[in-house]
Image (cartoon, rainbow, N blue to C red; front, side, top):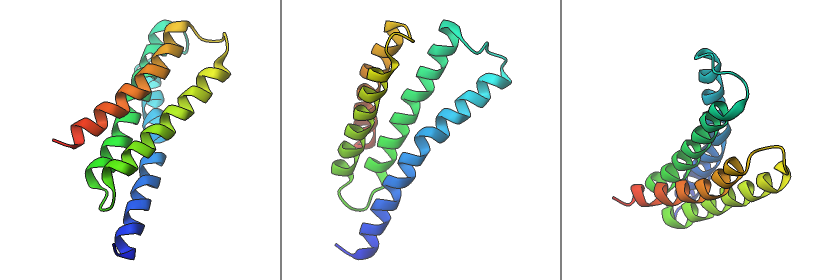
Amino acid sequence: MTFRRLVLSLLLVAAALASVPAINWIGGELAAALRLPPGGTPRLAWDLGWLLLSAWVAVFSVARWSPLWPRGLALALGGLLFAASVWAAWNMGGDFPGWFVTGVLVGTALAATWGLHASLR
């Protein structure tokens, strides 16, 4: 293990974490450009789709390109994303429909799992 490989791995994890809000921001801007109304079921489904895409991309990129411990770092990142989704679901309360909260919880775990699986091919 070299210091350079360690730093590259940690930078990749940081970039993957930064990609989650960046991808969600792109989804929000694209929704505005497509004139999706800012509320209701279609917009929630759109936002959930972008959230799941961002989780998949983050885990996939770490598992695919990390020079050190790619699976371990991807699993840790997936666990962190799932913990964040549990925290978000807990704090949503009754403000969002049940399908959305369930989609955040289950979808984030599935997206992370699929990202890890796709990177191993």
